[in-house]
Length: 294
Image 1 (cartoon, one colour):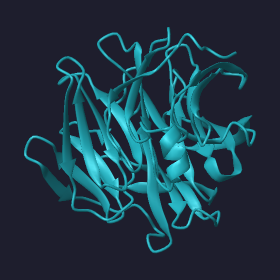
Image 2 (tube, rainbow, N blue to C red):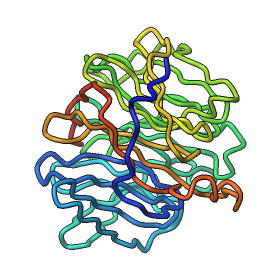
Image 3 (cartoon, one colour):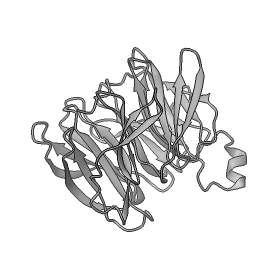
């Protein structure tokens, strides 16, 4: 099903190289997202339409940004950082990546128990050596699976018992059984597979009904899949590289979507001048409150 009526609007026009990791902060009511190759942290206030950019002195690409009990946690080539946005301060924390010389952090999300799940990718995104890690507030990490050239997602079912994960380079999205108590993953199985025309599965979020919204890298769209893996809705965007998404607003009824422009040719950029910008769309579905790390 294609939803031509659902037309995303550009809310922040910016040439982010690799926009990613969008999230909603329900207390300060702002949207945060990263330019992994800027490197930069973007902040957008939907009420005032004000947009701000904090340039970061970190290696590229960075990984992900999540809310913590105090501020945020950011992953980068150097490891994890505690982030105080108001003070514009980064404090180095731990580095769970046991293959830091070969792999880099990519996407990540917090589960319903407050664990941070991190995906790593091969530095060249060619060899299947990336993994899925979990990190707890005491700084302890665990490796749960390996074998991915570029890991993306993850997302969690409304009951917290399924972890969805994009194996981007092979165009597959997997589902794992997640034990909420122990954090153990089991029973990896194929959730959905993208065709070449659909592009590659990138970041994702799960709505309150269990629908899985997956971004299409090189696919010019974002799609909603039912819990059984069947395609439900596909929303076109005016840019090819669609990277991450999150529901926002007091009612969690607006889907915000990040995009990229990395390595796009002049010909493609002429067709997609808004590549790298932040988009928003009312999908008719509502999201779940994003858990806080720790």
